[in-house]
Length: 199
Image (cartoon, rainbow, N blue to C red):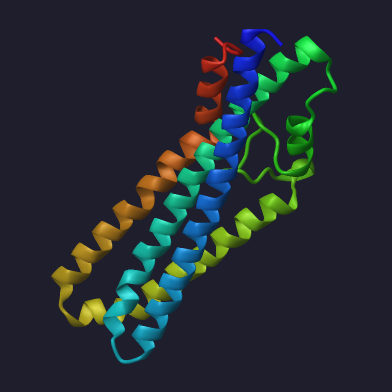
């Protein structure tokens, strides 16, 4: 194996390790958010209703952190796909198969997705779990806001306006940027440009 091929193989090993690491980070962030949300609900019902006011922010934190983890998963998968294509060009198209299997089984690269959930014929269990976890987070956000809103309004209108404004900004900013980056495809477009596959 020549030096160029050895370097590609080493990079591929690194990207596969990165993929594994960010899958682990994703589930770590999901676990942390779930435990924190459950604890805040318990504390809120345990006669500290102000805890309900923190739930929407923890739900937003969980959503943005897991999307951040997913952005690195996409990076690692694109990088691995490029390296596998280069190595397959040298050794034969069916030498390395991980990218082809991931495309079919997990989620496809370069297709329009809600973060990593491809709707339609490309929908997978991976995509379902992404949407399911997101749905649980949205439900926690809504219930926390509904339970906490009477608490903040009891402190006066100025507190309610301030809380509502901060929460709206904290919620709308990731939705807007995430829609542009993931659903609009900007993140994957930049990866294609970086790998010389699109001008």
